Image: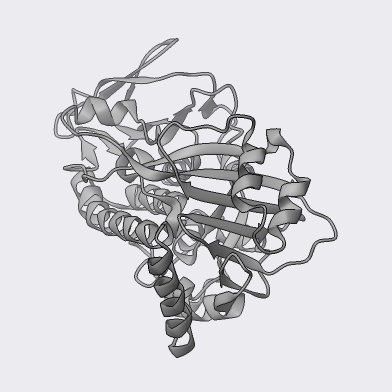
Length: 396
């Protein structure tokens, strides 16, 4: 939001830092308040689709991130036996959406974003809470944020404090908040030397697995399965993965053999099923999971946070921000929920029908993997042109 002179960002994740960089580039004095003792994120990767990369173009970071793309060959969707249900390639994705899909470690993206802020802009170990959302039409009533060192005033507060956002609860106390999505996830990033494989996601009965290479030579693997909320393995989560996926196709056994119990992260999945009435109130804007947490089945959580941040920095006021973001993120969240129902099917007959339908549809046209991004990956920031020189001219 170009008119903000003083901006406070609550949360130093991807959405918060992207917003901070975008606002800083537009002349705002930005302070990022991060509760954790450092910006080091959870040890997992993130997939950035062309929509998010175009957003990063707007802050001069898109080409740096595109250079980290490791997906060069074929990939697609498989069955636990190893049978390919749907195949595609990096070139097909780039042709369809005008840019690549990039997979990188979250820490790498965080580092690139933080490097574009002034050294004193980020305060870690700085728990923050909203004292007063302020009034956008009243220059005498700024927003106020409480910190351990006292209160701060701002023309704009960006709440990027995650799925369990305290700011969201303060702004919309009657909203029911996030609900359990019905499944849990595991993630691991490890070296896997000497093992060659095609990037893939595999769908079973009430379970999925994905294995993808990273540019730095490591492998990012994730799994998801229908499970009761709050459940944990009786021994350790690596052992749980072995029980659930140990007999699936290569390279899954090799990944499990290389992983240590401490390498495996497990988190239940929640999403915001009932959309918020707005993504702002007063001088406060919600971004990312604080505004529209969604299942990871489209890989769009972080991507939508980037879209939020860039849009926020470009619109003239917060009602325009809500108008631009609320309908889109609501639609994408609902699509992610539908995909979750599809890939978490548990019935034997239903999953057989699903797999055969995917295989047939993929022979008849673009792979299901690519069609799932139609209407999503083609997003562009509100105000072109973009900073990156390699962005295609037809994107402007």
